[in-house]
Amino acid sequence: MKKLFSLILLVCGLMPATHAQIRLAEFWQSGMVIQRDQPVHVWGSGTPAQRVRVRLADNEVQTTVLPDSTWSVTLPARRASAAPLKLLVQTDSARLELDDLLVGDVWVCAGQSNMAFPVLAERHAAQTLREAPNPLLRLYDRIPGAFRYNEPFKAHEAPYLEPARYFRPGQWQVADSASVRRFSAVCYYAGRAVQESVGVPVGLIHMAVGGSPAEAWMRAEGAVADALLQSLFTGDWFANKTLEPWCIQRGHENLDSLLRAGYPLPRGPYGIHHPYEPGLLYEAGVLPLSRLPVKGIMWYQGESNALSEQRAQQHEALFPALINQWRRAWNRPELPFYFCQLSSISTEKGYKSDYWPLFRDGQRRLAGTMPNVGMAVTSDVGHPTDVHPTDKKSVGDRLARAMLIQTYKKPLLAAPVPVRVRRRAGGWELHLANAGEGLQTADGQEVRGFALGDATGPHTELSAQLRGKTVHLTGRGNGQFLYYGWQPYTTANIVNSERLPLSTFKLPLP
Image (tube, rainbow, N blue to C red; front, side, top):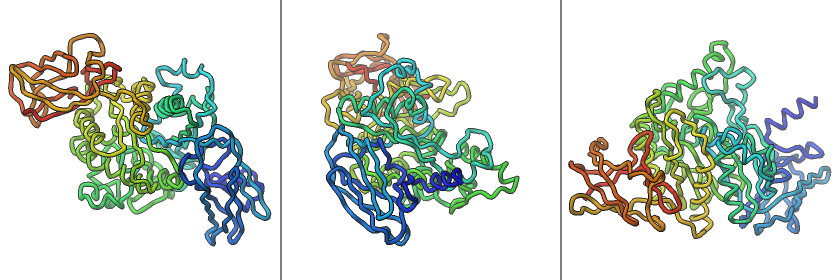
């Protein structure tokens, strides 16, 4: 019976009390970080009509459990504090107490496998895991209940395909050598850098799913206004030709053996449930979490949306819609959203990265047009044959820098960005913002990466010289566009004085 009771709690995603009549939502646990400067939302379940008293430090509110067995309260916003607080939840017959609650900033980390990539496999892991624990950095890992790459799911994993059960409830932990090992490396390094710079407690909630496409993290509502996106949420997802064939293939690899065995699998409006199904991860991950006040989002995803020209172009409408949906879910139109640009990988081993330059450029343009959206350039820390490059510390630190500049208003130098191109005698002059004390090359070699081209892509390489904050370009040939770093695996090498790299780009020539 004890095992059965534990399973019931796992399925419900709720924390046990001293009596079964009162429970707290999954994210409310001892050791958590409460979002500062926002009303504190606490919720859970209990016996209908039961009176519930909730006390956090010197604030207390009361409510009544609704007929559907849910309850929720809102307490006043609190300022950041590293002094541990207690939360007390009481009814006439039950009492639940949480301790060691800090108040600071909570960041949600999501995406696919490069966000899920753990610290233990990261290039700097040996040094990182030797470092002292940070009691002001707290980690919460939401682990998928059903996830395998190209292997069949087991029968005992099938029930986790229900969206309400897909993520297993985690546990808030202090960041130390044990808790950090399997936690997202990008999320951890970015969160650590923010915590150390800002000085307030930071909570990190990770819920990435390897291989997941962007549309799995969305819902049909809000996408249907765009015909290009509406087609993603139509009919059986296994037969939907506007989706990524690789994702559908993975679905078959995971589910076909269970289907042949006649095993009953959960289904929804788009067919059999799977983590790559449009909308499933939004329902499983975003909706439950959106009740918790947070500071913002960190995102590393795109590989599963960049394997064809059609998908790369589709993403330019898809990703802004995703950001706006998440902002509506949290009811915060200006919710900060920071993402990692796709890195670099060549096609020589058969990886379909031909359209990664197009995808990276779309990400660059988006970061410059949406408010409270920032990007970490990562094309220089890729790998020619590995879609999971191991230097995640550089990625996390750059993501944190964007967050510190835009959200925390720190006077730091951002990555260089192209501003305009001017024609000059014998060539062109490219002006960059955020050059700092002057442009340089990352490896001390001659400038690489520039080319002339037309709408189909680059065709003529250009020579380039760095002169302070500008690039002087020369070469023979004609073209309508200036390209930079326009290869799946790029060796383009311009950085600013803080050694932050220039992004892949395509600009019209005057």
